[in-house]
Length: 153
Image (cartoon, rainbow, N blue to C red; front, side, top):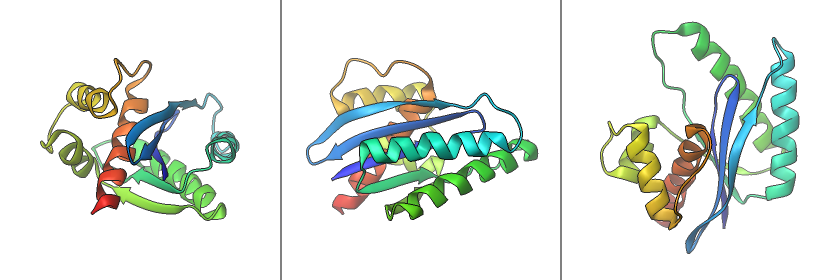
């Protein structure tokens, strides 16, 4: 089963694609959105559509929103999440959603782990030397790994 993990953001959306048995890395990266306003959502939808058509995932896992003190950012991320969920549903891909602490707990066994610890465990679990680029990609892989582990249960 191919699992697509997605880490929603306002201008960078991390993605990671893994096979669940055995747990192996297929692909990862970041969708960079430089457009402003509502055009950002159209660019996100277009990029995600292409990713879905290329990857053909069986399951997608999307991180739930973590509410911080910056409400403007939370609203922007919520809008991006809406577009992401719509695209996945449009392509009839099953969706799982996990909060940041659930992902950290599943990958590192510590719900308050920092991004470096998550990235380090992602490389170990996927048996790769490194995950290059933005931490959005390693976060997305952690979300995909969480879904793979939960799917086994």
